[in-house]
Image 1 (tube, one colour):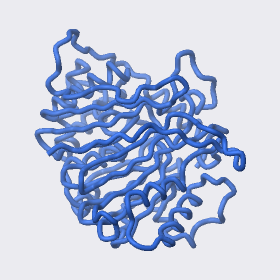
Image 2 (cartoon, one colour):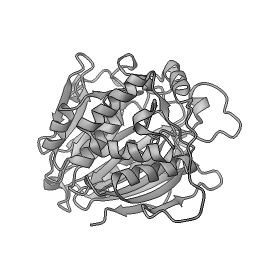
Image 3 (cartoon, helix red, strand yellow):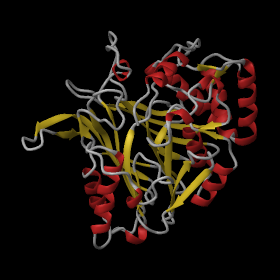
Image 4 (tube, one colour):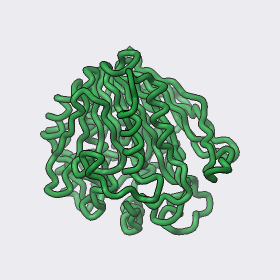
Length: 429
């Protein structure tokens, strides 16, 4: 999918916001914030910074604490609705359908010094960056895994560039690298299931690899074949839930894939900013891919039926099997090429799958190109920004983050990727 400059420009305009926030001064420790520290500092010539956030308390206090962090550490601002009726309708929707997020919205409003019942600012998101990363993922059910655990492995890929450069403009003075500030967040709320997630872009919702205390896990990926013309680009007119909020809903409230399907069918969900789809897995070994049909916008569930389930950046609904794929493109990074590679690995594998097998599968589809025609508006370097292993049964995540390019392979001209040491996280009892 070609990146659309119209989308990027409209996003930049929408996120020019009026709220500046009213954080309280002082050094008194916040009891809700158990941890808020940068665990991976960006060194000279390195790309990625990672923050570890642990929050425990009521959902309102968690929302307030996240908004405090978003303002102080990320300079996040709120989207202004097109008119007050959108704010009123959104508030009523959350009261009926997602009271946990409503409580967090109350906390966000407190942090920004707003009255939730009398504001035309959207407190349901804390954006500090926008577009979604490319990616590849594979889920292995317990019955075919070597350690008898359900687990999935995933690469997160995107461009090494600033937002301005992605928009085909010059980097602004002092502008940082886009998607170079990630976070790992643990939340232990008074209502709803505890969860641990890797995220970026939006502190409140954009938790793209997440597992909850019941062993329900979700991985969100971009869908490059859905079509930019079919998505909602104007955040000021949003209603119901966007895709990342739908993921948070099922992680907060669902224990099984069946519960997740029901929750998705019972909510109004919009495909916003960029087309995405996601894979939902649970500790029974079941999984499904959720997509919105590009033909009639209906909800579609694609079940794994006890087998490994693969997902990259094209619609599985439109391209259910490899034989339905278009002709193999020359661009090595293309979503269909990556899926083919993973499919060939799974079909050629004998015996059960170990964690190391999963890591090896991801190494076959690392993003390491200097001109990704699949998604780039123009020639930009693209790299795998992290590789994660999510052990669903252990409620644990192991993840290594991209630091820099290493030595150039003289045969291919492609650099090796230098990653950080693996970081280990586990949801507490």
